[in-house]
Image (cartoon, rainbow, N blue to C red; front, top):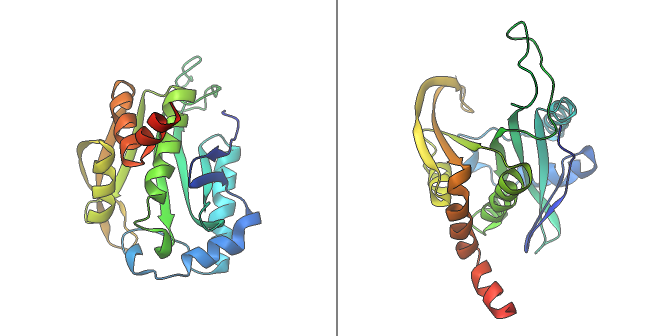
Length: 218
């Protein structure tokens, strides 16, 4: 399974999710929660403890890599995100089918999900740079074949953010899961493939102002 890392950008640092930042996470999730209608965000300290401990347990199994999002502008943790549903295609196929096979050193495909931000960090570019850091790790270090991103089909805000990355809409899976509002949720599935990453990367760098910074440095 991949070694855990800290990912640093210009205004965002993604740090290993742990109980050490529990108070910051609780404070972030306790801001205006009106944008969480279609997103599961722990409410209160007890729910946050369970949330972090469950993520860390999946990390220990090599199934996820959860991060706390630190906004360097304010030096505070303002949310969380993760690389998840890590699949390892290396090594022999498990037999019998369905049994646990050998885990490779790095994933072959992954999802980005469980992303949420404090109200004060929304619309600031924090989410965009967080996605850039995660995608860079996945495509450039792990060299994955595909990244999947999902959203409740009703969540127009999240879908617009995913589409702004340049992700491809693969389709809508009906009655996919239980929604954050306890209804039966239809889910929009998006993907970015490894051959598409260079164009997505340049698009993100331009939106983050990195192209101008690179030109000035030259």
